[in-house]
Length: 90
Image (tube, rainbow, N blue to C red):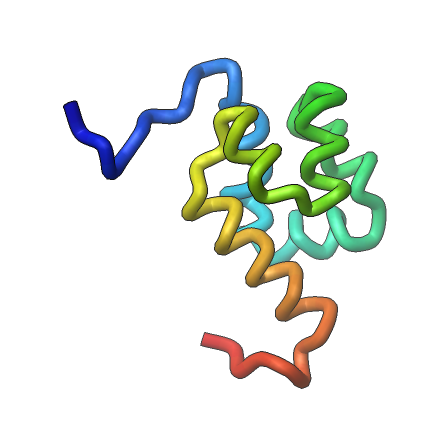
């Protein structure tokens, strides 16, 4: 048993896809920042995932099956967009 990595459950696919796109897809990230509900609709997020993502609730996202790396990177990218002067783009 590997205690350092877990495989997200299939039920968290939409949530992880959303986090991946927030991390990697600048156009999707811009749509999310402009209208989070419409962006979450695109990916079919359920009510729990929407609430946790809207609240930026890391522990709740992970409990719902979000991969911790995606939670971290999505939050970092959103933070970079909201305060670009505070981050050097990499």
